[in-house]
Every structure is written in C-alpha cells, then in structure tokens.
Length: 136
Image (cartoon, rainbow, N blue to C red; front, side, top):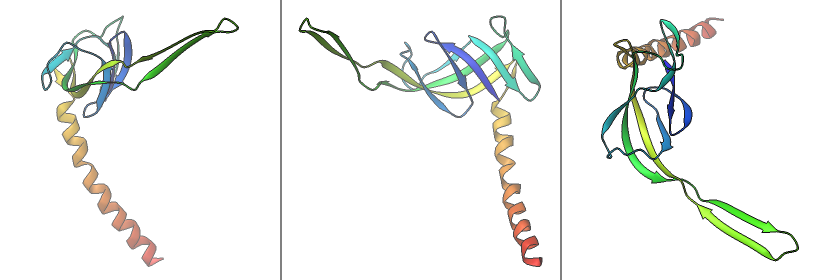
C-alpha cells in the first residue's frame, strides 16, 4: 500500500514503516500528526484517485527529528566585470516516519503485520527447493 501526499509544496510517494525528509514542519519532535492532503492511494481494494484530494484518506506520521540538509553552493559571476558572489544554503528539514495510511476508516497498519507473517513461509519453500535439487 502506498499514497501520494502533498507537503511543503512538493508531492511524495509514501509507504507505512518508512521515513522521509520534508520541508520543516511546525510540529514538536516525537509528536504524531495527520496529513490530510492525500492525492492518490493504492491498496488491496484498488486505487483511489482524488480530484484533487481523496476524501476520507489520512496519512498518520510521527516526527522523528528536525535537521538541516546538505549545503548547496550558489556561485554567481559576471564575466569580464570582476564581479563574483558566493553563497551557501542549507534547507531546514523534518524527518517523518509514516505510521499508517487509512482510507474511509480502513488502516494499513493491520495489513503491515499480515505481510510480515507471509515472510516466514518463503524460507520453508527455499528448503523445499534445495531438497528438489538434491533428488535430481
């Protein structure tokens, strides 16, 4: 399951259990908040496309920390004029962890635990493949 959200004037594709760096948000560290500007949601039921927003869709996120991005050098020069200007810039960012995506009351949080239980049977199939290769 994933969603496309809008924050800080940019659009992001987000999935539960992953973290993302977005423009600085006015939310305290370790606080939970909801993002209601959801443009698109893809889940087991299909896809939900907003016009412009998906109604009833909410992305729950937690602020991990506030940080600054990498330094960008801005260098301006006018040739033959001996004019040079060098500036640096570091963008203020907020790192958020996506906790859940819900559409119409159904949350992806329960589905994430179901997907982790599907991982164990694949290890058993690998041993079956080894057994098949030994018999050949």
